[in-house]
Amino acid sequence: MKYLLSILLCLNVLSVLGQEGWVWEERTPKPKAMSNNAVAEGTVDNVTYVYSFGGIDTTKIWSGISNDSFRYNTETDTWESIPPLPLETPVIAAGASTVNNKIYIIGGYEVASNGSEVSSKKLFIYDPETNAYTEGTELPIATDDHIQAVWRDSLIYVATGWSNNTNINAVQIYDTANDSWEIGTAVPNTNDFKVFGGSGAIVGDTLYYAGGAKITTFSFVLTNHFRKGIINPENPTEIEWLGNTDSLALGYRMAATEWNNQVLWLGGSVVAYNYNGIAYNGTGGVPPLNRILQYDPLGDSLFVESDTIPSIMDLRGIARLDENTFMLVGGMGFDQQVQDKAYWIHYQTATDTMNTTIPMVENNANIKVYPTITKGMIYVEAGGIDTALKATIWDVSGKSILTKKIKNNESIDINDVRVGTYILTIERDGEILYRGQILKE
Image 1 (cartoon, rainbow, N blue to C red):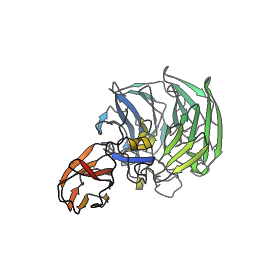
Image 2: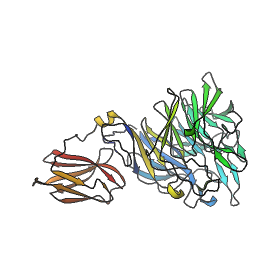
Image 3: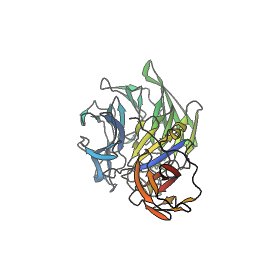
Image 4: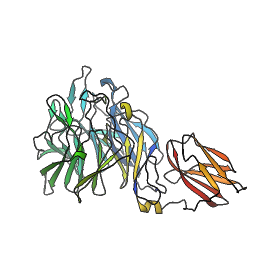
């Protein structure tokens, strides 16, 4: 789906019109708060949907793990339930990947009432067009909390992860066209490569993955190793594995995706934790990150953009809406709160800002608007202007969501407007006299 992004400003982002950078906005919440849910995108009748499969609910206990699944319509900003995952026992820590408009939900693990965990071999194929699942060939080796990435819109690489009682170094490759598995070159049999809770993406013919927890004598600890798996395009099961230490590579249950021939990791945490958000090291609850970690293969460098997205962790996927636009769904926020939130995240380019449908103006010096960061009320002073004015609030898609006729020293009530970034325009007889950013908290 091609987005018309006429205004792209966002809460907690310092960029303004005319500058490039990441922006975000909350969209309609999911009907049920879920974390560790598998997320991907699909298309029905040329409309892009975001899908959320399974996860764990606000109880954060074994009985809160659910097969419940949902989809979000990006055109109508609405959610609806879809058939639940057809698992006899629900799992968390599965992965989801879209190939040729089919979504492949792979692996995960069950949690019993006594706390024991069993990794899954299951693979389900969800068809957005028919809104139904079929069961694919099982994984050769049960796995969860693995790295899952797509190569050339055909093969899905399932690398390392946890299998019942340990991390594994296996690389399992699923052929979506033939519903079959092959075994690739294993990652090195060391704790710097064998991890659970890592994530990554494929750019060109290389799989990059970061983060994840390794096994130590007494606990599970994150590793700061950054890895590259160079795929032989003539024989995709042959992989050359490389790695190096980089302090920025620390991360756990981050969402990962390819973007602009680079890899992005969004959110996550820098402390390994159990499914309830409590650290394995005994320090208590784990805080989420509000960063985007970025890797540029051309420069061979990792770097971080902080304060770029909401603080969020416990992610098992991200949906791609177009080349610069993504969505995160669910996960945990501060105090390990399981979320129903859906975050629209976009990279604003110079082209976006030039395509605005609302003209740039030199603001009339007589018009004053305050506060521009508000929980509900905006006040307008239009000294020296005694004629009626029209105030309009615009959302990030360029759609008018509120219009009001005002005079000098009047207020605008936006209590019913959801949290996000907006543009306020004030005009007289079709001439825009004022244009400015409004942040609704």
